[in-house]
Amino acid sequence: MAHSSGKYADFETLRERAVALRRAGLSRRQIRDRLHIDNNDILNRLLEGEPPPEWTKRPNAKDDLRERARELRLQGWTYDRIQLELGCSKSSISLWVRDLPKPERKRTPEEASAIARRGWEATLQRREEERRLTKTTARQAVGDLCDREVFLAGVVLYWAEGAKDKSYSRRERLHFINSDPNVIIFFLRWLDVLGVERERLRFRVSIHESASVTAAQQFWADLVGVEAATFQKPTLKKHNPKTTRKNTEEAYRGCLIIYVLKSADLYRRIEGSWYGIVESARQADQ
Image 1 (cartoon, rainbow, N blue to C red):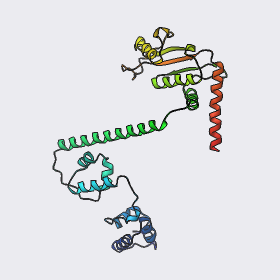
Image 2: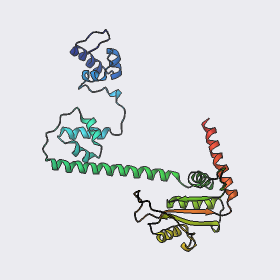
Image 3: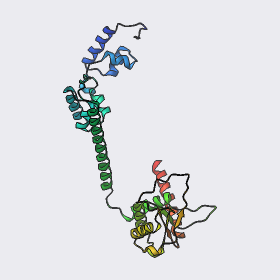
Image 4: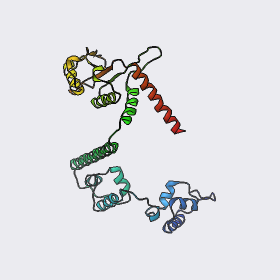
């Protein structure tokens, strides 16, 4: 073992010094610097079995789980049973109890497999609950939006998803397409804020030719509150036999295209507002 003097120190003597420093309350970094040890594996061997001082432990929301996992491990529980009981990952359990003796295996491979499967299902359920909680909390935090907030959010949405004017092809009109019903609902709310009458809107469905065009038109017509007969002729996408479509489920409704008539001036306002948002973000960044 390399020592600061360039010689090999006796391991047991060095371990006694490391343990004494640990029991005196020094952290791993302090012991490493004091003994001039620059190899973490060697430091781990020197301090093996020595718990860290309390002051080096960071508060952790999983401390209770950790203690319970250690109790169950000492009772002979396997990782799978502990995972099923506590709903935490096996990697965490392994980290918490790795210094404890391994229990004797008393189950058949089939029983162990069943426990592992239930443990994984419990983990998936816990993760799904965490996802739902995070999403619900975020949704509730939004609260009510004023017209200005709806306007700004709509400008960003349109600039991301809507048709835009090009220097080589003038298209100064609002032309929006999307497959998400919630996005369409918000887009119509945005048009209301802009003062666009529904009479100025035209609708068209864009969908794969192998899907039910009639059902899709009826779905979108019900969503936007118009008669399906008022829709323009649908845009059909030809099927490419070399590709495998994944959007073939019954819920597939294609995309809805919304055209806003006489919207050149409105388009210019939207484009100007978008660059106003960009400029404001740049100034805030500076």
